Length: 120
Image 1 (tube, one colour):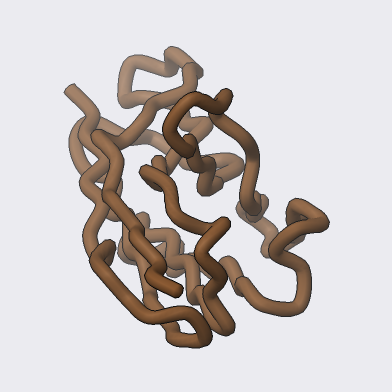
Image 2 (cartoon, rainbow, N blue to C red):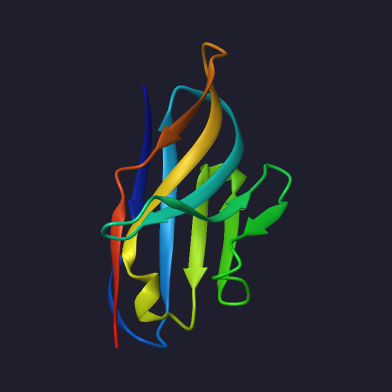
C-alpha cells in the first residue's frame, strides 16, 4: 500500500502565504516526479508545479514567481511554498507522485486533497 498525505491548507487573506506538504509512505521503491495540482469549483484539475527526483522544476504560468516547489527525498516529501496568494488561487490542492512500489510496479498516486481559500 502507498499513501500520500497532504497538510498545510487553510484560509488566508490575499497577499498572504501558505506552505503545503505531502508525505509519501508505504511500500515504495523509488519516487520519480512529484507535483501539485489544483481544482477550483466548476473547473478542471490543473497542474501547478512539478519537481523531478533530480530537482528539475516546472510551473504553471499563473504561479511563476509566487510559488516554489521543493522536495526532501530522504523524507519522501514534497512542499509547495505559496506567496502573494490571490483569490483565484482558491482551490483544492492535490499532491501526485510518479513512483515505483516495492514490487517494481510504476504508477501515479494521488493525495486526498487539501483546501486552500484566499479571501479578498
